[in-house]
Image 1 (cartoon, rainbow, N blue to C red):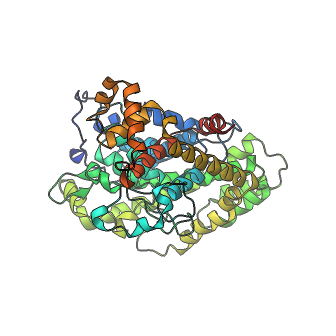
Image 2 (cartoon, one colour):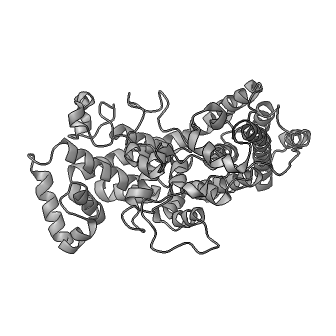
Image 3 (spheres, helix red, strand yellow):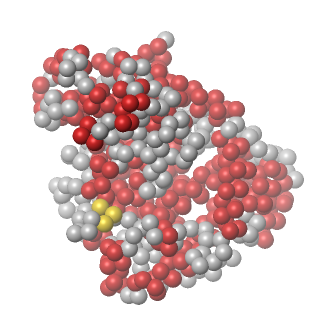
Amino acid sequence: MLQYMCPNFDFKAPIEFAARAETPESENPPYRSDFMRDRDRVMYSASFRRLAGKTQIYLAGKNDNQRNRLTHTLEVSQIARTISQALGLDCDLTEAIALGHDIGHTPFGHAGEQILHEIMVPGSKVSIKDSPMADGSLLILSPKNKLPPLGFKHNVQSIHVAISVEGNYGDFGLNLTNYTLWGMLHHSSISYKNGRVNTTILEPDYYNQYKKFYSIQTATERDAWSFEAFVVAQADEIAQWHHDLEDALRGNAMSGSDVCSALQDNLKSIISDKDHLILNELKNKNIIDSKYIAVVSRIVVNTLVNRLIECSLHNLERLWKECVDNTSRKNEFFLTQDWNNPEIKEAIGLGKLGEDNSEIQSLESNYHRTISEKIHHSRDVERMNAKGQYIIKKLFQAYFTHPQQLPDNIIIQYMTDVKQYESFQKAVQDGIGAVRTKFEALYSNKNIYGIHEQIMLMRRICDYIAGMTDHYAIEEYKNLYE
């Protein structure tokens, strides 16, 4: 049983360094912080609402009991708040990052994310006919012909959406603070693992254009990193662990006995004796009902959260003694320390710094091998992934070949991107008929519709498709091709 004591350190993100690209029109009331405001801006955004119609593992809407991207996000937020509360961190910042971490996700889950990346880089095995990306020679362009940003990844897209796609708060989208944006970007790796996508380019580079938005504006241009961001990254993993199990049981990808045995094998070094006995009892039950699934899920979440809090308390206390010492030096710590330092990056985790964590590392890799892979490579999931990728590629081809099929707002945004209009508002004033006429004249003129202009159109098409729900993408495909 975890022996918990309130922490005697204070590693909350220094709100004094929180900054927005644009000063809000109104000041915060005394009872609201900047991070609370971030949380609410994300929660009331259209991108957040659309998460309800996006795949987590199984196609959204196919089974009301299975998770979608929104229910996953809410679970991540709840788990992350629990951990942050125990560690004395800022729960409002934690929640803002958690609620915003997936707003850039695509329809059809990670399969949708991967196909968009492959479309948006040159030399990929997946390319759109007649697009500049189909030409691998783009890879050797000289620096003076530097291309517009390439690639796609959902966490990079999340900050792109928050800054450049959403339009509720002026010229900078949701106008979130640097700390929330940094946490959204870093909840997952910025680059793909080898073999995950069919291209040699593994890192999308369009996050670089937003660096000033997630930095602390000091002479040293430090990133606005926080332990709250690392908490959300860990909570995201824990949420995936337990809902993979639930989906395995509901989707009959694994038997109840196999799931219980897998948990006992993988969590044996950290699971409580009581939970071990409960799993033994569940092995012998033939009926997998909602209570059965809830008990298994509770064991996974409680075990992992307890372990993470125990280790993180130990690690943060050690960091405090070695690097900070007192509250007055806390801000200096955040300004001078590199978040990539292993002692900082691994402080929020399932292992204790300075101790042998090989068992925990083995646990993490074995878990994914014995459970996650059985879900993610099941027949139903593989069929959904292939179907989703096919639909996305066909949609992209249709929009790129005949871009007048794009909605008015996408065309206006694009015409602003390529400096045909000074601002979105100016284009709206001109009237959509005039804008579309000007748009057609642009992409029909090969002298001015060059590689840069084509890639910038592809980026707007990418944004449009990424924002779709599963159902909308399927219906749009039917409208275009059936």
